Each structure stands twice: as structure tokens, then as C-alpha cells.
Image (cartoon, rainbow, N blue to C red; front, side, top):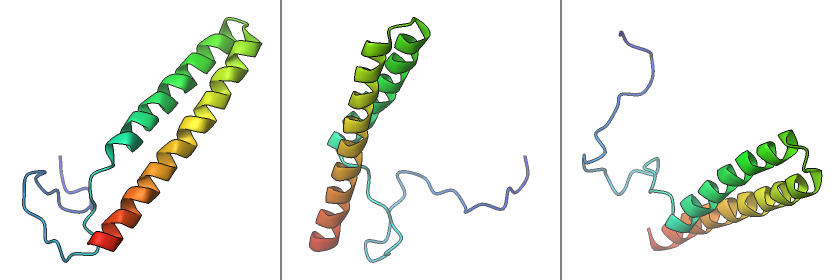
Length: 86
């Protein structure tokens, strides 16, 4: 209820300075989708392991790794496109 010492909050609709190097762009849409798949695959892996389905749990873990790598790829690609065009 008091000052937490963090950065001041900015309204999401407030205009940002395009020349500010610390301004962050929104996450690319494909990166968000891959992140959602990653989180759901982790949940499915936990459920599989708890139920004793080790083979299916391993498949979910592999899918988690793949979707995690896809998330990082799309985030990095979005940052590179922003730096080239920005």
C-alpha cells in the first residue's frame, strides 16, 4: 500500500518515446503461442508422470523443450527485426 521502490507504472495506452532504447515492444504473436504450448505441455507432463504414464510423460517433456526453443527463437527474431527496422 506504499511505495515498493520499483519503477513507476506506466499506463499501457500511454504513448512511448520511439527513440528510447529501453522501450520494449510487445512479444511476437507466435512466441506467445509457443509459450502457451510450453506451459500446457509442462502441465500435461506432470499429470502423465503422476498417473504413472512414464512414456507419455517423456513425450510431453520433449514437446516442452521444443516449444521452449520455439519461444526463444521467435522472441529473438522479433528483437532482431525491431533493431533492423527501428
